[in-house]
Image (cartoon, rainbow, N blue to C red; front, side, top):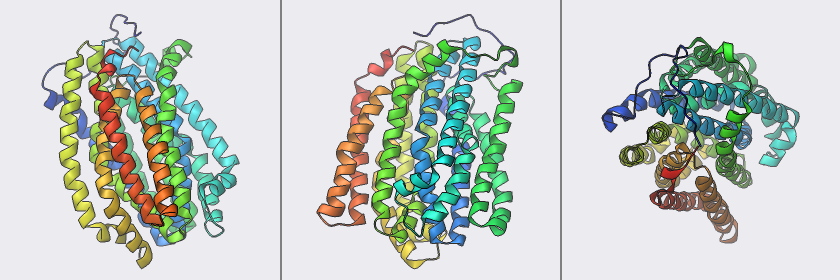
Length: 454
């Protein structure tokens, strides 16, 4: 259970109190920097995709395989970000600055150790990992070259989103926004130069180097006390009690985040069996879809702060009203965004590839998946609500059921047994996301998250 100490200033900047006042204004206060931060987070991904497209479809496919493997491996980091954010938010809501700062320090330590370890594993086993992901003889050498550099820089790649997620929950989204701004500016300058000079390796070096710039800036902010929470250099220590509290929440979150990431890797391997063109189209679609989902993801990242801090302040009904309001906003925005994406799919695909077959395949994928992405975004909100309360077990179980008992078996059935080919995979993904969203809302409505102790 969360233990409260007396408030302590610890040199941190003034914090906006989201446990009182208008829900609309508090959500807006958190949402605009998070949304801008998410746009800046996704923009380098799109920018990178454009430059990879200039190298060729094989480069797109290779980057897609390496990125898919990375997303599977970083489930630990995603869980640590959510777990530390939930703990920090409770202490911030309880006005316990000392423990909030301590939780930030222990969260950062866990993130650095985890990302370094995973990066080393990726570098050492890049080739077997790419083979496992489904790389064929044409794509394998490119994927290995790209993957080794990506994994060598994993600490930089993951510290930016991981710290941002934790600080968003603490009510400091501006830090993440500025980190992403540094990443985007660095990418705009470095990628054209490095791609022209080094080709495929230049693209991934630009990606890693730009994230390193954002990471160092964010750590500097935490060390200097220019955020509502901070890392106090006078109190640098390992606190295993606080780490245990974070890991208790993050433990189920590893499976919760890992389940969709691993499922995506399994689907990527299945997709790769339909050729490099389909794989390249899928890689581009993922980049476009992640950008299109920025509004739902950005607003979903507001949820842990609203839930965690209001629960910490003893206001569960206010937390529930905030979740309902955000869910309605997300639904309205995503209907407009995804409808536009379905209509403009040919224009979107042509930005990333001049290969007619890749563009045609990508347009078909985008139009089939557009409806499913609405359910996917809705799921983000209710997933974040329960995770923000410290309940990562329920989303974990729901993810496992929806993905491994519905989506994956259905993809194999429709694609191979029934003979729909790759179209069967896209249909299965849509059905799986709707099943996942339905189960998540059902669990949320039970209300047990409001009783969760940290």
